[in-house]
Length: 131
Image (cartoon, rainbow, N blue to C red; front, side, top):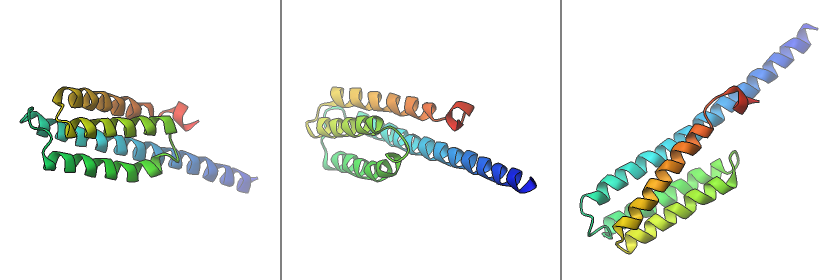
C-alpha cells in the first residue's frame, strides 16, 4: 500500500514539476522577445526617418533567427497559431524596416509586444494550467 502511495506522489510531483518548467520556459521566451522588441523600438526611435540602416536590418534578421530557434521548442508545448502570429509580425516588422516605414514598424512592434505580454500571462503557473 505504501509503495502505491509513493508511486502516485512521485508521479504527481513529476507532473507538477514539468508544468512549472514549461511555464517558466514559456514566460522566459516571451519576456526575452518583449525585451528585444523594446530595445529595437528605442533604437529605431532615435532617427525615425532612417530606420532602414544595415544595422537595424541586421538586428531584425538576428532577432527573427534567434526567435525561430526558440519557436521550434515552443511549438511542442504551445498553440501553433500563436507561434505563427509571432513569425508573421516579426516578418512584417523586418519588411517595414527595410522599406523605411517607421509608422507601420512601430504599429507592428506594439502589436507584437502586446501579444507577448498576453501570451506570457496565459501561461502563468496556476492550478488550471497544471490540471
